[in-house]
Image (cartoon, rainbow, N blue to C red; front, side, top):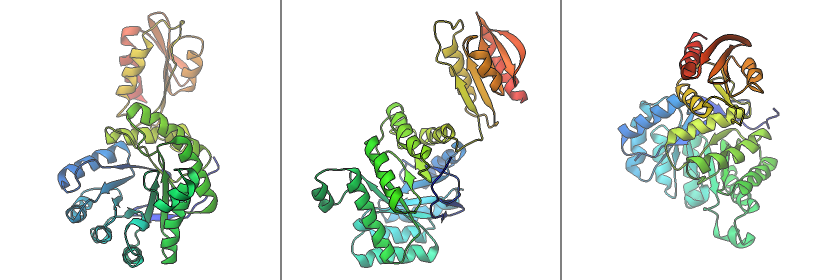
Length: 349
């Protein structure tokens, strides 16, 4: 896949942009001032495959708490700052790996300069985060509505502020809850800057709707070679954000490791309870760290072919199924024993 070449920036112990891997981000929903709860959530996110974590910084207590949080985690932490430049400076002192701000809402140019200089001194990049709910009044008046051109103009305005202060370690996000606007916005900004882009559909919704919207928006851009880091924004368990994000990257070929699971949609030819079997297999594979492809297929039309292409798989028959291992039939199993036998063979791989 032809991925657009962007500037590489350093976040703690990793890089974003350039030839770096596309990273998966999430944001804690704990009270940042509650160090223990926040650390525990981040450690859970790490296990799920989260590469970068963002924390809200609503006040000075939260900014100071970041120091203790950072000591206990293993991934870069981004401080999410709004309006108060002092919170940004304290977050830098607390050891964050990056800031997420809109320079235009931090205050005067002098205050922005103070933040930029502090970040530059520590080698900390700044992510400019623009979304459809935060457009400046004059830009809204110019375009009369939220649109991709307005979002891009806002983002570029913030970029120019930092560039005027000789600050160039920049990442940009332009998020919208409207998927088509989000896609168009990133396409436009990608044409005029080479800064790394953080992809996301903001306020995407609950697990079901949010997964669909994020997969369409983020997946479309990644397939076009646009994007360096992603976040799936869901109203729900933050662990699901990471799981969905990683699956999107797998689907477009940016993640090769881990389990690849395929199952057919069932039809009138299916003679086993494939929906139940596939659900149980997927659930039990959730903690599997093997780099394998598993196929659970319902009938003899596509089943044997798909199962043969997989490292391990099932092709269903009437109340039973064949288990294939790298193209070879290794067992015929009754329906009620299929899941256990399949999992037993996966353990052997």
